[in-house]
Image (tube, rainbow, N blue to C red; front, side, top):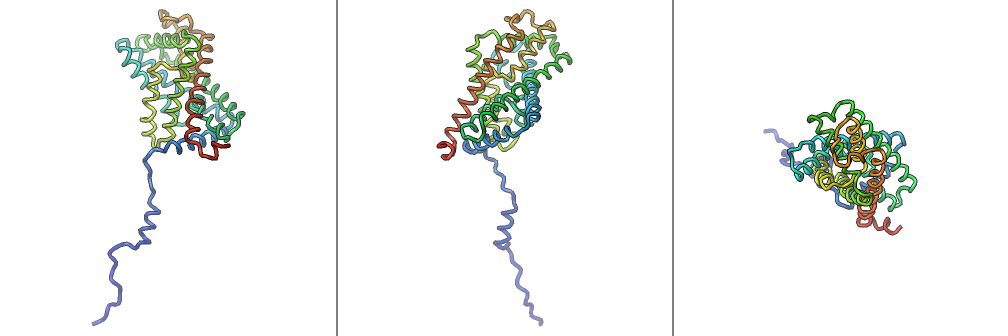
Length: 300
């Protein structure tokens, strides 16, 4: 009989094949970034923001102003229902407003309040003061331009007349409520607001999926809205749309409606903007940089 010298078939894969397969198989990490890793991601993003050309930064900021404006409009529509009691109305309105930051973080846009986190790059000496100031100025005015463009489109679309004019009335009342408090009160509300906003942005940086980003930012953003804090970019929409609604004949009986004018808008934005800078840059950006900075950064 012929002799078969062929080796018996192996029943298992060789170690080398297993090793190759493990290398080629993508390793997906679903865990959120650690606080230290999040800090690195925030600082890296800050460097990238300073490398944008002025035109790109401005247009990207216009997107953010419009995105936040859409969230603010959603808030006005939801809270225009007179049947809702105060607490549930604030909570539901806050959740509706979240749409704005979800669009900013998931679609990509330059938001002034979030860019206060760039202060950590200053502490780490990764960007210059001039680069920071240039970015903040361009983005602030870009946010304003985007918000005003949306206000114009909304006025032309007749949105203030929704719910038998209740949306327009709510717009005037909301604007008045943001102008009548004293400047110092608005300033501290701005600080508290951007603490929560920048924490939400950091959560967005730490997330590894769109779903994680959305879920992570819901409560901080809904919280600051429900608590009545002041967000300068949101107010770039709330205040002008309140003025437009007033000029269209809505909200005549709203308390403080007489204060809804251009000087009143500038009054609020000055306090809210400075408060947002302090809250985001000092209480979040610099504090988290100090806690999570690498040893070589901390001793520069």
